[in-house]
Length: 119
Image (cartoon, rainbow, N blue to C red; front, side, top):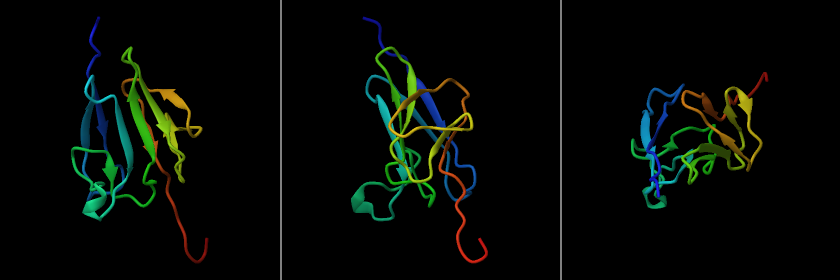
């Protein structure tokens, strides 16, 4: 039986200079990566770090999305019912459906949110 390939996932925050890039991998020991909003409460186990996909971002839902690898090595993306959406190649994903991701694809979690007087 052939072993699964190792897939490198690079997550780069676009607008928050206080956050940091993540380089994570999918392989036989890690078949999925949960992506979402970090918590400032350590006991919740959701602190942002270079070793996870939790971001300090008000536009991301706590359980925003997931990147998964199938038994054949195919990588897919799912929006987990987020408030502000997930985009693949600038097209908004339908929640709870899997979408195939290819090397170099642009994935965006959340959208710009504005509020306050004058909107």
